[in-house]
Image (cartoon, rainbow, N blue to C red):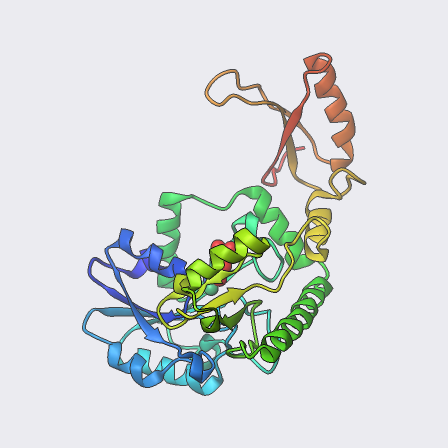
Length: 350
Ligand SMILES: Cc1ncc(COP(=O)(O)O)c(C=O)c1O
């Protein structure tokens, strides 16, 4: 969306604390970040007066991220309405990053676009990374006016063309499958948030109780060390990884971000479900994925030379075992070490 809208010299209003990658996206577009404070004393809610004062002649986009990374703050409807009003009054785009939209721990949540459905300058971005624990699949989507989507599509076409097919299949499985895993995950995040918030509260280090996402900020000023130094010390001496508040701007300089979520390993309900549905229980029952052509490449594949001709087979994952046996036999004993499997888009011939 940034690449579709921004021009050299434009300014983008970003939350502080906020996800650092917004800032990192701007220099290569020749645009500049301007930060609006979301002070810890206000529970990391945006300071609307300060925000209004930052709008200038080059301001083009106001970024809103609720639930917020790194604070877990969820903005009330009145705050969002005021931000929309500010954007409309100043002819700004409002980009709502709703990547944690399903991870609400308490209370209610509102999407800005729902408050001004006819406003063509509101755009919303989503990801599969959080709701379905699919970070590695690199898949998200943008909702906005037809003109914006048209331009964004051209930008995307010129740099990545499209999302890989295998990720699209996984996303389809995530959307079509039972959604109970999402509720289970949010329940687990809520329990961990309660646990960590309780511990921090008892130690008088809790800044604000997060109501969304899966992060919690801890005040580390009593440690007497800069947050970054403390984060490295914790990593070295306790093998505990936290993110220093300085990574997210100026406001949380005396804090660290704790992510109270265990790493999603292969046993995570969401990931197990997605891999089972997308790959038909890869390595186990091998069922499913009808109507998709399967290419099997014997590997290691040396790019540029010696690339083997794919043996394409059709269409059922049930065939996987015999196919692998066939490939192994044709290569000779001990040659089959790794197989790269690729799904092609639906084809209309058998
Ligand atoms: C606020 C926010 N927006 C966007 C993203 C991007 O997610 P992904 O690149 O995995 O889709 C993240 C990831 O941490 C995030 O915290």
